[in-house]
Length: 452
Image 1 (cartoon, rainbow, N blue to C red):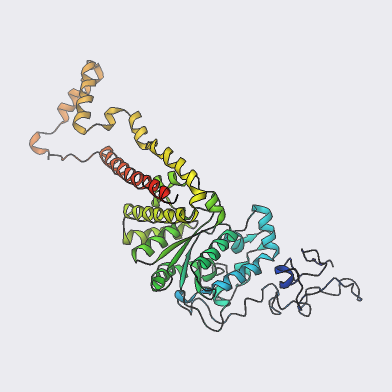
Image 2 (cartoon, rainbow, N blue to C red):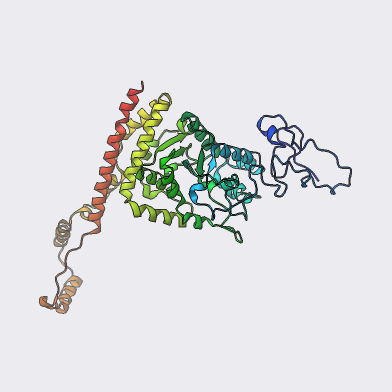
């Protein structure tokens, strides 16, 4: 039976599901005392020795009882049903430790080869033939990654992280670490990271649960956002497009809106790749509509839309998110002015020449369709007057007069507003919002001049 050797080239054996022989080799290249060591030819007949037996298992990388689970995940003590959402937290240091454990697995390696980066969809659902780590490492426990890492005491969140599942998780980690250092946040601070805080295996057939829907029914995002308002608040992670666009994810829009509504402190954390790829964001900001944000799960989508509309209209949410994005952009300019200035100046020039697509489309329409009902009726009458009525028209007119009831029996019909009038009004409102945003974005020139 062949064994997988360490990818570092040291010739040592790897535990099942990992590509490194030990944690020391993975981190520093120096082997620790738990290394499985180099391949040893068996003295027993071939096939009689299991290289991944419990006796050989590396306790630094795996658990004897569950040889695919890293040592940073002790046996589950409680489930997400037993612990309130605000205590589904993990320390910043544990977040990094867990990603280190993921990074030495075969799945991580395969995801990198397939996409060029690793996102949370790969870590959760996996890639054939490998299952997702988040599910495989917690299945039938009812206990999330965060709760499993803290069997002694469930930790109450101090910092809420809003992010995209489609993002490059290494960019996310980089952005959060830079944010932590910049704001003097301790590595022992408890963060709430949805993918690791919620139990992900609950939707599998036969699993003990809770299901994802059961957890979402507790409104964990809203509850945690309100809880951290008296702590460190929320940080919104920005990573490079087109892998992920934070404001296109309906969950993130809801989290930001709830934070702003409850006056929870909100900051941004940006990866280097995001800062270097900011071109084109101003035009997107100008035309963005929160109602167009989406969820991958249709049931989640309906749930969030209901929660949003219970609190505000889409127009109010649009203004709220635009104001937040503008504030975040100004903060970014203060930190990275030298990298952003030339790009932003060029974008601001192009915005001045922008024309709303709906307005151009309206100009191409038949003017009768855009007229008021009275003018439309006059235009229609004029068209009929141009041609004398034909034989069929005269016959129809005679029958209409015969069959028409007396005027006294006919109730007056009130004119109902034409749909086109409503559309015209919505276009005017959209144009006003557009002009309002343009005015605010043009003020960025003053911020750019101030950083010289």
